[in-house]
Length: 357
Ligand code: 5AD
Ligand code: FES
Image 1: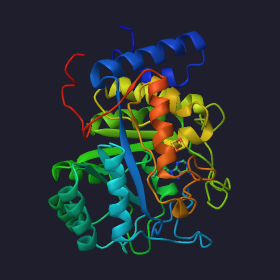
Image 2: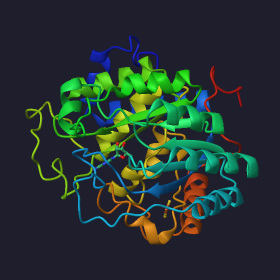
Image 3: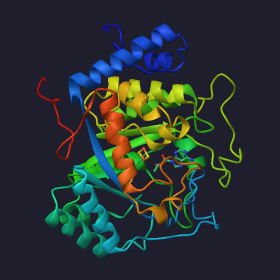
């Protein structure tokens, strides 16, 4: 294992991303799994995902919830629906709920602050927010209300590619997500980010630099999943140029595992989910393989069934037809079958790693 990423350099990472020899890749999976075990242990933490609204003001070129996609029926959960999902999470012994939505200013600062306070008062749950690029005042008030963590994927470290896939809203400047992530950490949030693997225009050098930016930002959580083309979006329709042949990163399962494994090796202490997008491209084994190649988190869906199909960031998303109970049983089974342990407690990042076990 000693020759793995000795210099943590862009060239080394790029070399591994381009690796195709199955024997060499076996070494990569084993190194990532061993690093995962040593730094974050065998527990797999469960984060109950509540998709609280699918309204969005942004027009991200890859996402099915983008503002321009007129045929989506929009919904926003009520306070009581959110609280009832949170209580379900307690019943399932999850340590965390993730409140996720499009960038929806119908989610008002005070309204959400009251809900966060209530969850923190009535439960022991950690609360993670994933609500897009909100103003500082919102982030401060929600942190004061008790929110523990914030997820905001920077999607790509390459400025030019970022601009192509995130056209700024009218009258707005192009955003600087790494700067927002630094700000979130300053406010006392655990900060999570990530990228998609294989977006058109992403070349190997960009993806290697993405992984180095995870390290530079000292992220607490890092989510990576394959890009899945949504036909109602510019990226899904092939309207944006790919990198030249041999340079374009493919949006495959294998490339996603390589990215997960390298992320674990570069950021040994981070909490890394085996993502729903991975489970979508390999329903049978995607989650398990992610967990065996560096990941230590899963995010079972708690969204009430009648809303699930409407939260279609990409087509054929896993768990669309399941209820919270189904995902709960499914996830715990998958964790146990690969010899791991469902986590207990909030499962926040432990700086310096866990005590030896
Ligand atoms: N394919 C895969 N992942 C996607 N996301 C959004 N659209 C897609 C897609 N078409 C990811 C983005 C976003 C997260 C919530 O879902 O990385 O940050
Ligand atoms: Fe939802 Fe398996 S996690 S059905």
